[in-house]
Image 1 (cartoon, rainbow, N blue to C red):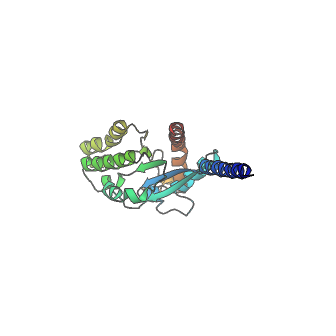
Image 2 (image 1 turned 60 degrees about the vertical axis):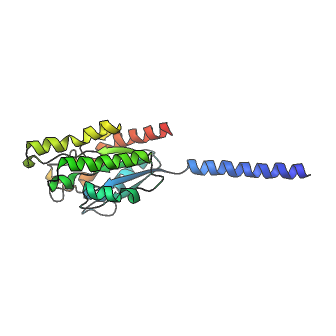
Image 3 (image 1 turned 90 degrees about the vertical axis):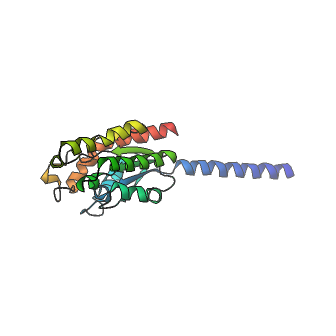
Length: 213
């Protein structure tokens, strides 16, 4: 009789263990969009921002994901570095790192921007969180030296840390007034194009993370 009770208890524990595993597997893939106003959704409605549109696009393609918005309008790479630890919670599996535009607009030395982004990538690597680095490009009116120095930051860091690079976050939107709110920020249509263009890179990054887990 005691043996039967022991066997039953063991079976119940086994079912609970299987349930815990099943529950863990059912958790959505967690992405954090970490950046400035381009990530935050400046000037857009509650469902029109980049992270919301990206989550919807990924789910439409069958990915069980959440995309958290950790964008702060006006943020520089220095500001991003100071808030990285608490803005990217434990359990995050992929960060889309998008910072540098405000550094460029303020004429911050590319060496400082690179140092800050380098530190962020090092912190995320230490936490074993994958990164898709979203690049930015300098405005040509800042001069060739600044432009060359700034534009080189992102491929250098992507190579150093072995992370995928999406070369230009505003690809297809920059220089297109019909897709912008104010000459700097994308409108809802612009965001849709940005999501469409970056989507394959995000899907690849998700596949790599899942393949390594």
